[in-house]
Image (tube, rainbow, N blue to C red; front, side, top):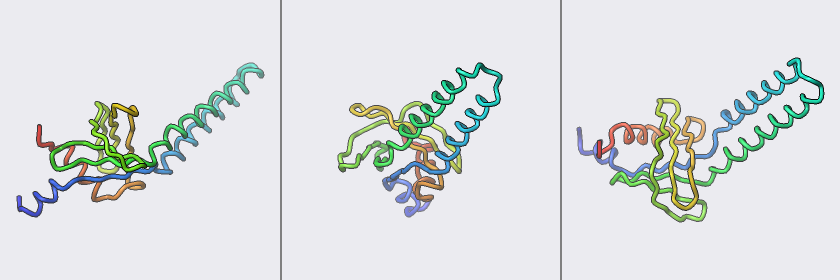
Length: 146
């Protein structure tokens, strides 16, 4: 491995993920399908509006939960230390949770922060830089500790 490639591998990976809108659209289509199933189901008439309201409130709650990570930035530095930078520029040390999905087209990374909780990062071609996403996948697969 050349020195340039090694330096590129060790360079910090900064990913500012905003929610990919196609995934939110799929979520809305799935909830719409659930509402259609309720409409065509042989249920009592009084139960159908209740179930439609439950599905609609589930869509609203999922959308709000999904859109709240829009202002976070994830940084993996050369020493394999993770940092989460919020919208005010404050950097907090964090660690990835056990939930991790890596694929060439999609990476889902959940990070734990002691103060604010758990943040899922959905990293797709629609919402991140391709080079940063690729470097993050490589760094996660071939970590220095393992």
